Image (tube, rainbow, N blue to C red):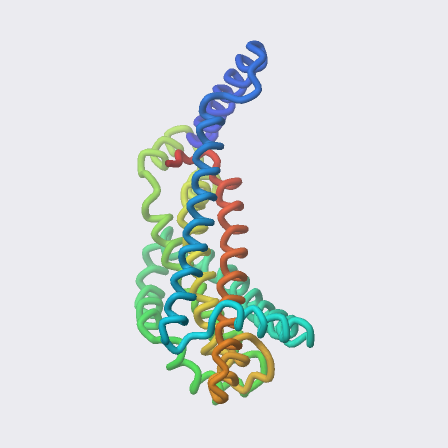
Length: 285
C-alpha cells in the first residue's frame, strides 16, 4: 500500500476513534471544533471591521477634497448601470473571458508542470521558455496577439490565458520537485511502479502547490482583464472603465473596480473551499 494511503488510513482510523468517543460521551462538539468556530467568527468580525474602516477612509478622503467619488455617488451610478442592464452585460462578458482563459490556462499548466518536475529532459527544454515569457507583461503581448489572431475574442482570451498558465505551471513544477523523496523511496520499496508512485504519491503531495498556483493565477487573470479588453472590446468591465476614463466618469470606474474585486474574491473563496476539501489531510494553522 502506498505510504500516503497508509497515512490516510491511519488518520481516518484516528478520526473514527475520536468520533466514537465523542458520541459515547454525548458530546456534540469537540473543544477543537468550538475553538475553530470562535476563530472563524473572530475572523469574520475583523473582515467586516476592515471593510467598514476602508469605506470610512474612502469617504473621508473624498470629503477632504481628493478627486474621488463618494460612496453614495458610486452606489447611485451602480443602481443606474444595474437598472439599464449595462452592468449585467459587462459582468457576463468579462466573467466569460476570465473563466475560459483561466480554465484553459490551468488545464494546460498542470500537465506541463508535472512533466517538468518528473522528467529532467522536459524541464531542460521547457523551463527557459516559461521563464522567458514570465518576464513579459501582458500589455506587451497585445500587439502581437492582434496581428496574429485578429480583434475578436481569441486574442483577449489568449492574453488572459497566459496569466494563470505561467503562475500554475511554476507552482505545479515546484510541488513535484518538493515531494519528499522518503515517500517515493518507501513506495518503491513496497513494490510500486513509476506510474503508481506518480498517481498515488506525487499527485496528492503536489495538490496544495497546484491549488495555490490556481489562486495566484486567478488573481492574475482578473488583473489582466482590463489589458485584454483594450483589444477592440464592445462590452466588459475593463472596456466600460476605459470608456468612462474618456469622460472623466469616476463613479463608473469605481463600479468597475468594485465589481472586479467582488467577482475575484468570490471565485477565490470557491478555490479556497476546494483546497480545504482536497487537502483535508494537511495540517493547518
